[in-house]
Length: 120
Image (tube, rainbow, N blue to C red; front, side, top):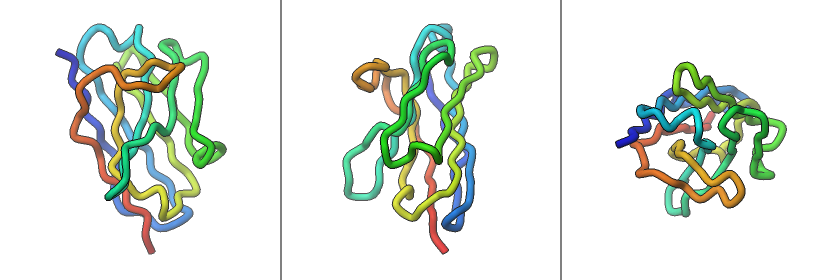
């Protein structure tokens, strides 16, 4: 059973930066596209960014393009989300998951997520 453990969230002021990490157990990590999602209070979970198995291609939702960067280290079974120029509307619980990179439909049970709060 693959487990996903997200970390790196916290409280940051508008305009600040955070780097999220997601450690995945299991041997399928290096052959899986991975994605980051977020869920704000009272809203549906939405995809934020995706990356192909070897990191050769990425995709972002429009609202984070130019501010967020997804990356991965297959040797460490870890995927990252560098978030810059954070805005209050980025406040949410952030999750990672294996994904279908075309549809961004998640493939595995969800982890506990990591809370990101952007506020002055």
